[in-house]
Image (cartoon, rainbow, N blue to C red; front, top):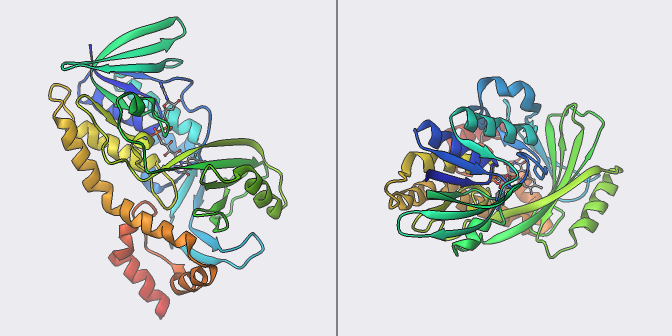
Length: 362
Ligand SMILES: Cc1cc2nc3c(=O)[nH]c(=O)nc-3n(C[C@H](O)[C@H](O)[C@H](O)COP(=O)(O)OP(=O)(O)OC[C@H]3O[C@@H](n4cnc5c(N)ncnc54)[C@H](O)[C@@H]3O)c2cc1C
């Protein structure tokens, strides 16, 4: 019997497994494939990322540093509005290496990691959960006092225990070119329905082009015309789902969700690496496997921590659908230096932001 069975070794699962193992619990983590693969993420994160990885990880994760964003209501040839910080806003990192680093940190803390093991079923009883796992040698059953569903946007765990889905799933597509680009601005194009397309300079790793939108729309065609406007042909295409808006409930009697499985994402960018790991830390702090009622405390605590930023994030996203003239006017009003933290839209009301806006009025 494990204290915790963790399903999925992405950032949320590995972070939780590490923290729970450090707390002295027996933890096993099942990953259906190989940690970090396949890639379906930009790895564009705030500088908070460095507090979640070991000190020496920066050398093999870091690709570029970003000071601001150019927002366009049209394509690459259109005028842009620049939003920037005096210091570093964000980093572009190697996402595959991030997952490997986090999984290794979990193992170093004492968690067991089993790759090529797919969780196919769950049965909750009063005292434990039985987990069906298909591995290279066939199907086995494992028991855990508590199961953490960290298995991404299409969470099998969520489906098995009948928890509700996130409010919305977007389809994100990425493609890359190889020429190094050390620019310190990303480009954001408000040219797709209800979301955006982007260009991210990744230093020596080249340039990434991407977009996200509702899956029913013709994503591939839009991606082709977006990159054609830039005059590039991308390779290493990949895609994935992005949950927007957490479901109303993220735990049952002995099962709980973290990360994309729980919709722990920023509604205005889809970014979920840091919200997921923040929720993982909260889970490790609140959940005692001997007292399953502590799952409700986890649910309350992550909502307390993220709710305001997620609510404000929805409002910001609403701006992507405004008529172009209003977007242009709004951005003209606020462009320039900003003091906002990229994961925390509530910092729009911070002293730092006020100072940045007032300095722009001088
Ligand atoms: C195109 C795109 C670009 C993105 N860009 C960014 C970005 O720049 N910054 C950012 O912060 N976020 C970004 N995101 C979102 C980010 O990728 C996710 O929020 C993040 O990966 C969530 O981490 P997670 O651990 O919850 O889930 P995941 O990273 O999806 O990990 C889940 C793991 O569970 C495993 N798994 C699934 N089912 C099972 C099963 N049945 N049994 C065993 N294992 C299973 C999977 O193989 C996977 O390894 C992007 C997403 C997309 C699609």
